[in-house]
Length: 151
Image (cartoon, rainbow, N blue to C red; front, side, top):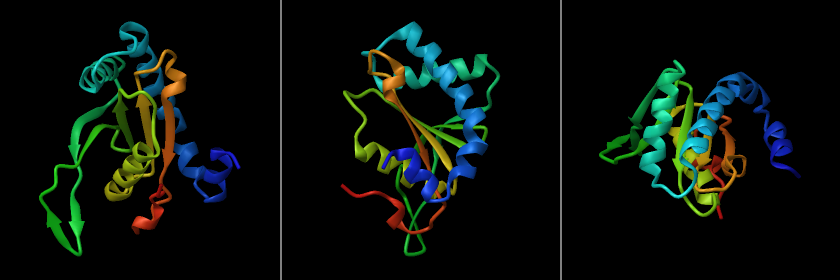
């Protein structure tokens, strides 16, 4: 079963559709960054460059947005930060790794769940062609940790 079939089977197609236009604009900005910088830099360089490109394109975003973490009703002092939050509805996690792994997907899905958001993008800039480093993630807004895939 393909990832797209799995997503639709879980009933998240409306969330995916609602975010597709915004995702497309963000991915366009990411392709622009990758075209100019290429692979091989640190995540922080790509994050700053993507933020600059989003700014140049007039796309509203915030960098390093804090996500509250609660454990059994108690707020924890834990430094959870979203790389980019675009238009208060799309989380973008920037990576510069050899390959995206299941743990990266799980991290973004958990961030989406904690932030009560539906859609996110994992973008790995350390690839020869950026289309090989993109993964869309949809959260069906389940409140339990069971929505996070385990290895």
